[in-house]
Length: 313
Length: 177
Image (cartoon, rainbow over all chains, first blue to last red):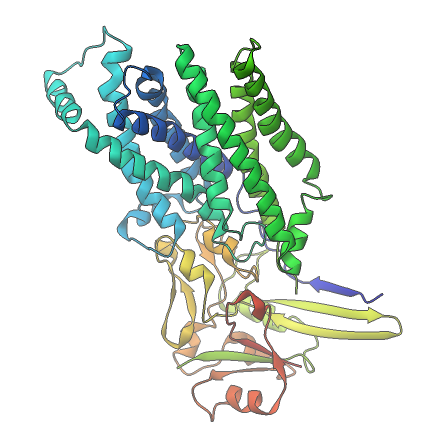
């Protein structure tokens, strides 16, 4: 057998023996960003179609938590930075080639949008709510007048945000596991699926519950399809990509990925949703929480496994 | 102008003098290194082959680190040298993840740090510190666009390779084999 032993004198912290630069902060943010994108997408979508009466929870209630999700996400992104005091440098330049620059700017747009959206729906959810200053009522009226514009810009920026969480990783040629264009659509669809699951949690009417569990079911189907294609693509590619796929096909991430993400996070909730839509009475709380759990773990596992995949030379 | 380095793997003995010279010249924090020695043992006994290389940032022509930097802190200066401006760097780690050679590291001060081809010396017409101190004279540094430079001359007559050319980064550190 031909053997090659590589000995390196380098032992840089967080780089060797394998890359360990991103910890819990990045995957948590990727999850929260995707979830926020999912909730805002459905709110904007149904609002544009004029379905305020049919989907009050998706349009009015669920988006109330989005500002909090985005703020927690932004805080965890900030914690991830090693040179924290210079974070504002992100906003002194626009770099079209850098996914992270896209992400920083789209967050700059979608965070205020989510605050405005939540604010103009506060009175609908809490009828007794009153703004402390009268000029805030004028501001609110202004935004309600232009709600269509608000909804359209939210729809577009939510799609960019959901997509970018995957592209952020897939742009790195140096980490073969991430370097696949499937990751963008996969994270977008997973974000929409967690958004639909959250809408199920907030839903009060049968119509809303049924609609979002049907949507979630379809999204889980697409996710499974994309995961199969992810591995087909990696296995049909170069040596380093085959090794990256093997992290999940017999390697250290096999059990956590297939059991916790695919089985508990996708297949079992899909089966429960099918049974519920068919005729059985099962609280939809169960599959919704499982989908959210699977969404978190998908980000964590892909982020950590990707850092151990590398080019060998 | 296109600065490049050629390292003779037949002459390198892996003494680590280049590593220490770099750490001293560039005030590299203790425990870190901008260049390092790699030893590759190939084959099975008794058919063994060994190659020793001094590795560092490849100052790639198609540098993924510069492409993915969200603030423009990673940039390319004259001669194709890839540099990091410390007070523009937010320490997000994108460039570190993007480098197939893992040539970058997070400096304890927060910003990202890496080999500069001793930009501060090269500008004055001096050689990089690692090249200067090499006791076996196995490193050659110079301008690839100048056909008379030492590095152009040696690449004309010797066989060479680059590291992971299939990653598409167009590395500019050449290893003579």
